Length: 249
Image (cartoon, rainbow, N blue to C red; front, top):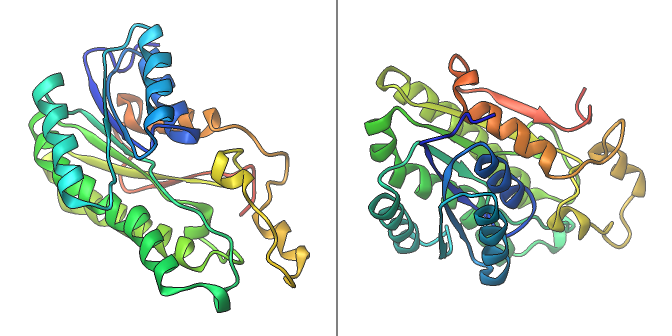
């Protein structure tokens, strides 16, 4: 497929996991890419993989929770690649910790990257997307749709991403922009694989966040993101597509 030939996609959190898999998928379908992450080495690895498939790739090491960093990445993307057609917000932090041990620093850091970062990228790119009838895909989580144990700031941040997505979808639909989200669950990514049941917690609660079939790789989510970002999803706006193996069925 070549659904993104002639289009430019900005992807945050592109150094690994879902961000890298999405970059690979969109590159394979013809997109030029602007990739950003705080992890420089992983970011360059992703870029080299995508360049090997023939994609034009711009990279920028940056923190989405910092306004100046986001503005710099967006400005460079437009100046170098000519505009923006697709924005995919993947950058995120996941922490498993008992609420009673969750610090304000934990809360602010996770909200800052997951929710504020998504807001900053959306705000900075909207005007450019309007020029080309583009669209946004945000990464929420099954934690946004139901109670997940030991993830208080993460769940709150992803619930905010879900609400932010719906608001943007309604606010800009008449102007030609779509905004959707995906809700991954039980996906084998670096942050998911760091999961440990907190000391003293009931291990039975683990079953609330496990897929009914099996855990799958980030390419599963990348396929869903590519669909939502493509013209195949032209009549889909404001939705949250679960990619969770039936976790919340």
